[in-house]
Image (cartoon, rainbow, N blue to C red; front, side):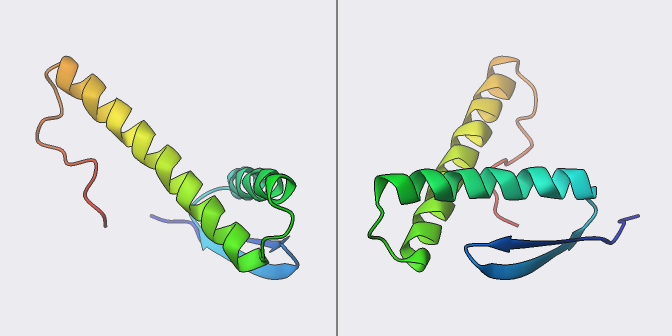
Amino acid sequence: MANNNIYRFRLSGVEYTLCGDKTPEEMELIVRIVEQKLDRIQQLTPGYSTIRTMTLAALQLAEELYDVRKDYSDMLSEANIGAEYDLFHLK
């Protein structure tokens, strides 16, 4: 049963609300990961718009997710387990 925890935060001057089964502490950590990614991109490309910066952050985080899924899938294949799971299937 999913808890409906709510976490409110600001990101690049915009207020957001997350709702889900993560604890507020987990949601805060997720937001901090995104903030760190945005801060790093802003440092490297100070002239980029907020939209462009957020798009690049999303693409970089998606790349990191892809790499982790691939590594996990490779590990399962090497162990000869998990062949029936498609870790790259988008839901």
